[in-house]
View 1 (tube, chains in turn cyan, orange, red, green):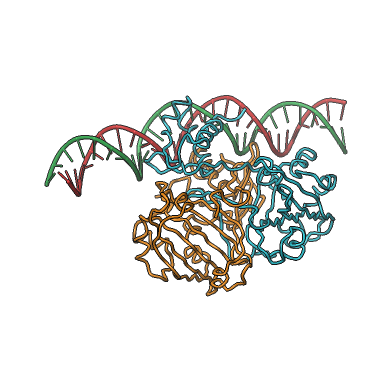
View 2: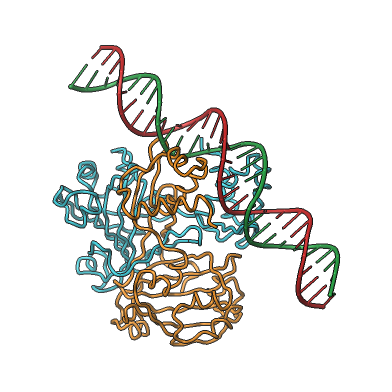
Length: 251
Length: 251
DNA sequence: TAAGCGAACTTGTTCAAACAAGCTAGGCCC
DNA sequence: GGGCCTAGCTTGTTTGAACAAGTTCGCTTA
């Protein structure tokens, strides 16, 4: 039983996505929507706030809300799981574990995973493919407490996120992402079938549970041209941050 | 005179940024905050919703809110203006126009700027530097209606955004960004002082006014290592989207 | 005709209240 | 001691009301 405002948001989102409202068109007024859905204005405002956060609509005091874009954003799960994202987008995803071993956390890893340096972590190297083409090289470090569940997985497990959810009841809730470009190293080049030094899109990320407990710290490298990240922002909602040089804890 | 909830959000944000609340620590309950600031619970909820949208705090029904991170996100202006961002970050930014000419919009440009192909646009090539080092190559296409104001600017105008705001009253409100990695072309390599084929972080973006009118479509290329983008997301707020291959209108 | 004014409309902010739903911790029972 | 269960706390959802502030557009006036 989802909330009322969520259903209204979904209905409006559908209408926008299907083209019921053109980009630049005006949305009905809050009073109108409140009457149409038989709810209070507060509930309508919550619904449109969802769409505003998604970047689909913009608003100015005094003027009707306008439609900014038509594309729906992905769910959190789709962004954090390569396999779930690929399936939702209608692509055939593959992947397999190339190396996996336990070791002590480095200083950077410890900082990211809220551990002390040297505490046990599980390091995994995965190669993932799209439509049969190798596209993404994942170097993931899992916190020790989740390591046993990861080790139980098949080497060619398609969706790690899904497997950990079903098998260990692990729920991911928050993520922080750092995006930049790097040159392919020797190992990168060999596994992704590109020349050494060719451009890769790097996404480093830390993912945590609903309680704020870090689960994994990953360095994902995409072959240039295979993947694009997109963000929509506004004066009110500005999720994107630009930083100079490397991350402070470096490398 | 800012709104009450905005001031409360600012005060809490400051407390988090200054380390008054450690990462993982609990925030006071809504009732407690309402009493402390002498406002209703609704106003407190609006304030913490701001922090949640910024990715600073997370929340679960039934449990106290927790602090997820300490870094404040940038203002919209800082993200859209290289100069304003650099100054706010304490860096010395430079820049100058290398080429500028009027021409007709290509199909892609017309689509992005909500024009018809062939309508007049202003194409500008700018090289920007950080601490004296060339770092960013901007290929920007301005919609015809703003072109005269852009042409009036000095070739070494430091902040174009600021100049257009002060001079033409232009306010930017929304942006859409596409981030990927590309290899440096011949021109890129020469101007950024890197080898041809070396990795660049590419950010293509379209910026619009509060009325939803597109102003500029820009292709910005950063030298690898000079800049990192970061995003914090959650199950509730997921601004980041991953897309396959190139943008649909290609190029 | 063009500038200016104002009325009607629309979104923004805030309050108070009530109930739903999920979490935590302490107490109770075995 | 260990497991279960409930009472109380905390966040989530919704309503209704009122006023503030900005926009739009038609009408009036110079």
